Amino acid sequence: MLRKPLYTVNDFLSEFSVSRWTFYRLVNSGELKAKKMGSRTVVTAADAQAWLDSLPGRDPQAEANAA
Image 1 (tube, rainbow, N blue to C red):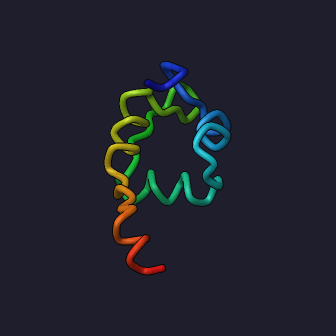
Image 2 (image 1 turned 180 degrees about the vertical axis):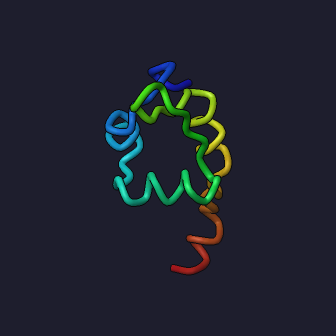
Image 3 (image 1 turned 90 degrees about the vertical axis):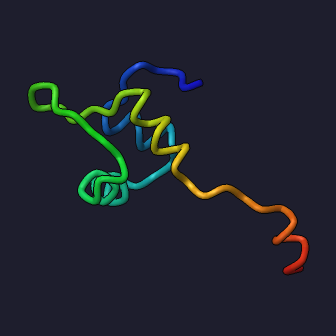
């Protein structure tokens, strides 16, 4: 569960450790949905969670075999 119902760009950058460039690349590619509130760009918790859920999972077995 995410901590905030709404993330500003700066909140999102801090919370998810992505750069501003990466944030806008994700938004422009459609991988992350963002909305405008006046002049501010925001991401809802639901859209942030959907983006997190779309990320590939880590496979510990494959990592162990590669070592």
